[in-house]
Image (tube, rainbow, N blue to C red; front, side, top):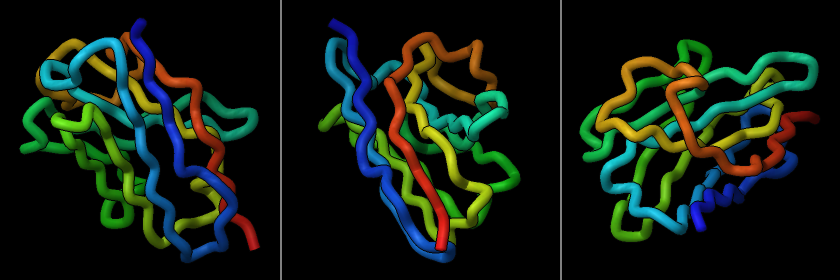
Length: 125
């Protein structure tokens, strides 16, 4: 059974950090580009970052460049999102997703076929 499970969300003050994890079961992520998306209340889901199968290349939304870092551990079938210098506008539900392709030059939701249930991130003082 294919499953993506996110964890690591929570409440953090502006300027703080969180590390999200996405553990995948049911398939090996070796052959999948992996991405993180988020959805704020009343807004559409947007791409945050994605990483190629090898981990050699990554893509970031302009709003998170220099603050967020995506990584993957294929041996653990896990993808991470390190989020630093968090801002209130980073608040939302963060979703992990898999794309049946080696690279991910575009953060387009329809390119990703498998999704997790999401983890809530709230940035507030």
